[in-house]
Length: 126
Image 1 (cartoon, rainbow, N blue to C red):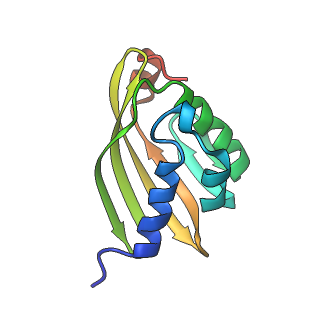
Image 2 (tube, helix red, strand yellow; image 1 turned 45 degrees about the horizontal axis):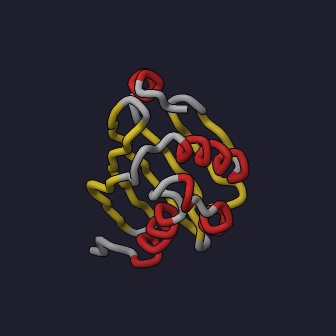
């Protein structure tokens, strides 16, 4: 049984490396290279969306609100799927997020983001 797929892990690493340290190091070109053009995204506030361009815009707004680099607590990769649990410091406190990924054709095809939307807004999320 394969537990880690290095291609999947590499895509996920590139995704986080493009934004995890905050807006001063946000690399829109790098994150766009790892996302499928027709990215399937689902999140508590945005709902279900299609397309990498809109997602990157939302990600940039999120990153602008970070007060410190995110702290990845756990990452699991298996075949063409991955999950990442992390903490992020927002203007009014720290909260936890998890993202579930599916990859294919050398790019991230889908992201499902899970967090408490009311806590996010209360902590100054954008």
